[in-house]
Length: 70
Image (cartoon, rainbow, N blue to C red; front, side, top):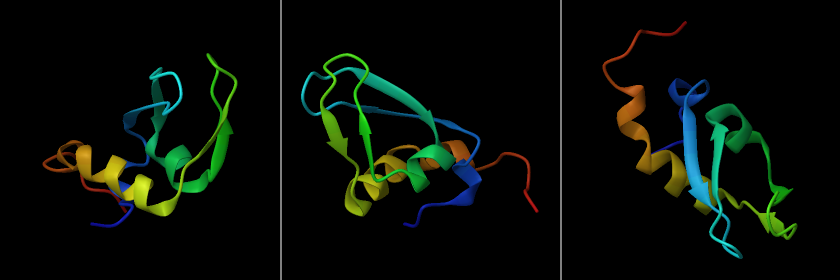
C-alpha cells in the first residue's frame, strides 16, 4: 500500500490520539503534513509515515471503481 494519489480529493478520517476527536482531512493534506495541532485538545499530533499508510489503507476502497485520474 502506498499513499495513493487516487485518494487526494477524498475525505479521510482518523482520531486524535490524545482526545479521540474524529478528524476529517483530504488525502492530499494527510500525505503532506507531518504534524498538526488538534482543534479540540490543542495537543501537537505527529503524523508519521506508518500512520499515514494505515489511514490510506483504511480508506483504499474510496479510490477503487471511481473515475480514472490523469
